[in-house]
Structures are given as C-alpha cells and as structure tokens.
Length: 238
Image (cartoon, rainbow, N blue to C red; front, side, top):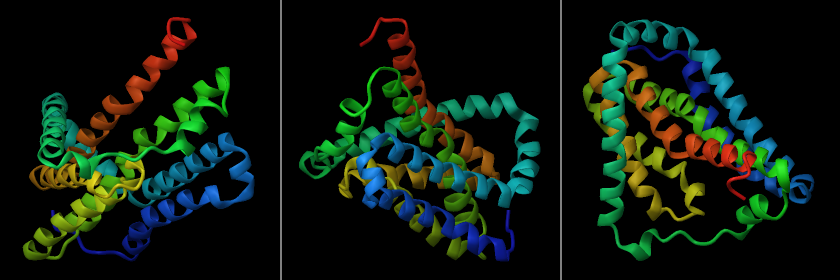
C-alpha cells in the first residue's frame, strides 16, 4: 500500500481547504446575499469543481484500485452495507455519550430562510436537490484527501498511525457548518472518520472506504431528499 509522494499530492491536499474557504465566503459577496438561490448554485459549483480536480489528479489510481475492488464486487458491496450500519451505530453511540448541552445545534435562521421563504414552488425543489448534491459527491474528494493522501501515503507505520488520528479530526472539523459552527457536534464525525481510516487500512484500497462513505451519505441525505421531491411532485407532500 506504500506509495511515494508526488508533486501533485501537495496540490491535492489544498483542494479541500480552498473549496471550504471559497464556498464559505461566497455569502459575503453582495450578489449572493441578495440572491440566495444563486448562492446555493455558487456553492455547489465550487464543490463540483473540487470534485473534478481531484478526479483528474487521481483518475489512474481510482481506475487501478477499482479493478482490484471489483474482483469481489458483490462481497465488497455487502460488506460495505454492513459497515454503513456500523457507522450509523457508532455515530449514535458517540452522540449519546456526549453531554446533550454540548452537541446542541444552534438555530440558523439564514439557512432556513434560504430553503423556506426565498424559493417558491419548483425552484424550492431544485434547491432541495442542490443542497443534497454535495453529500453525493463529497465522499470522492474526502476519501482521496483524508484516507488516500494523509493515511495511505504516510512514509511509515508510525506516521501512518499519527495521520490516522489527524485525518479523523480534520474530517470532523470540515463538517462544522453542518452543525452551525458547533465544534463539539463534530466529534461523532471525527470518530466515524477514524473508522473510515481503519476501513481503508484493512482494504488497502481507496474504494473500500469510499464505497462505505458514499452509501452512508446517500442513505442519509440524497435518498430522503429525492423521496420528498417525488412525494411533492405527486401532490402527496406539501
């Protein structure tokens, strides 16, 4: 699994920080302040750009390791489903172990306004889909950076062990916006980031952790969002 660092890896490491920096500061621009729907589109565009850049940088690695992963595809997918369940249970356990007052998520009236009052009818459905889209593509970017680069390319076992903890902390912290800035609420995600790191080390293949992460996000966000959209279009949900 040991791989040497390349010049492109330094660029790969800064893709996610740049994505967060640009995406989180778009709201500061007057145009996006006045047009929440376009702010949402702008944020998604930044996510997609980061996704495409990382895919282009590591497409050969993804292709090579996919060939290995698909040799036992159904077994790997079944195991991925089991690991997704374990990931959910792990998050719930850690949340239950933390003091409730620490992980309480503060209200964010700005975000609720974006989805509830600024958009109407079909545009609101589009906004719902766009808001869920990052969770669908994020596993590719996050697994490449946190698991493949930080853990997989560590030069020795000692550094790899340290990076396993560091990447888990960073993985949790990048989700702070999901909890309106409550860093304590990211601790369960740090734990599951550590778990994803262990999955990567066991598989010795990026697709091992990537598939678990992707199914986890899809079940949590994309599928419920599509379900709500379909029910709304059918006139069942308002």
